[in-house]
Amino acid sequence: MARNGTRLVVFILIPILVLVNVTCTVRKVQRVDPAIVTPASEDIVGVTTIRAEEVAFDPPGGVVRDGVVRAQVKKQDYTIPLTEVQRLWVARTETSAIRTIGLVAGVAAGSLLVLAAIVAATKQSCPFVYSWNGSRYVFDAEPYGGAISAGLEKDDYSELENLVEQKGKYRLRLTNEVDETQFTNFIELWLVDHSANVRVAADEYGGLYGLSQPRPLLTAHDALGNDLLSWLRSRDNLIWEPEAVPDARGGLQDEIILTFWKPDGASRGLLVANAATGLWGSLMIKRLVELRGNQAPAWLASMAQGSAGLKEMHDWITREGLYVLEVEVDEPGGWKVRGAIPGGGPLVAEDRVIPLDISQARGEQIRIRLRPPRGFWALNSFAMHYDASEALEVTRVRPDVATAVGGVDVLPQLLASDDRYYSMPTTLDRAELEFPAPPPKPGMKRTVLLHTRGWYMLHLNTTEEPATSLLQKIVETPGEAARFAAAEYARWRTAQR
Image 1 (cartoon, rainbow, N blue to C red):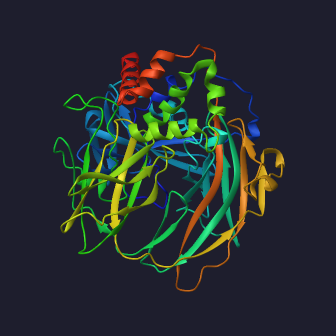
Image 2: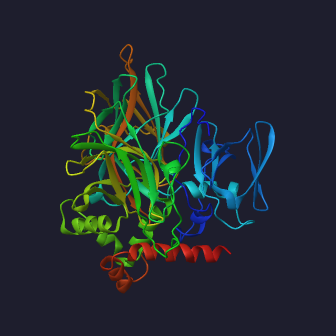
Image 3: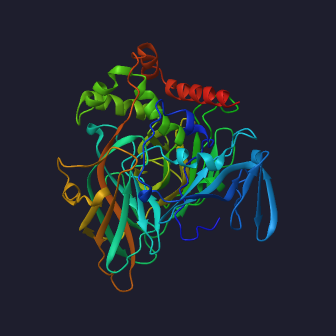
């Protein structure tokens, strides 16, 4: 499917109505000034089929009736049953902004209320960052996903693929579109001018790599023998993310084997993973915290940097593969953990570099194993690099304008990583930012990355007593978190019938 100059947000894989009934226990109605309300339209612009085919629709897009998607493709009528659709692509356009999202069509015919549910289906985690592309704002980043307490505050690094310089300025819009309070501590742009054949990507900690000779996947398959190469070999609209239901063997943890060519004597590889936390997994963050009931606020407050509680939680999510996915390398002594893929916001995936020690791997190929629990991960592409990273020169620019709703100057809160934050407690909050845009070096290509630091506070239902026995079972029993998530998913699906 053509990108049409718009970054596609590729990680909503759960049925469209899932977010309407699962996450909110209280619905707030607020009077909104008509002056700040902009008309919006939603159009189904294409589909990805279960056969790994991408189909782009002619304008104005398609419709869903009686369990069938109907559209025109190259001026010819096109129909496809929802049972053969892996994902619907829906563009939401406002006067000055556009967001394109992928929505799995795995719901029963007749219950797919696409246009009525788009807003609810996109407002589920982290700040949203829109880039000015020369004519409008385009959804481009979703930073510091999973940082649900002050102790989990973190730095995030996002490529801004749509950002365009205009009159010597880069312009961003930062919005809260979720039922939570967001605290942004710091924001800046990293401008990287580099050779045209180089791909720039960051690791989890902000280390940058200039990569020029990616080695593509040779093979990719799961434990049942299903070929996943079409889904995982390139950054595109084909994203592998099974629903939170048992596989053919009754299991809730997949096993994916990736194979790459390996040069003789290579001792270090750079795995580039384009992946994100799955949508159902992101919903489970809130659900799992709310199991603590009226003790949830105190528990979140105890997650201080360096605390024993924080380490225990990190060890648990790593063991379960929930929001950290271990990367194992096949060695003569068996599978060894040599790295990990970090989770992120569910709507926008970023390339992440994972350095791997492959010195013990033997032969002309290297095999990598991933074991994601179902519903918690959305995987788009993988590549391997062995050559030395090109030296990169980075120009860091901070905003010179940051204006919130009502013309409030919030620039001082965003210029340094300190104890001052720009907070957005409601979904009416947003800020317009401008950055200086020095011209790129002659003959060089520019990649722009957004460096942010912050955290967000979930708006929780904490009126109940803690579900102590269930929590203990989830924390102490391997695989129980995935079973809990699958049970919640099954309960929701039953309620929709």
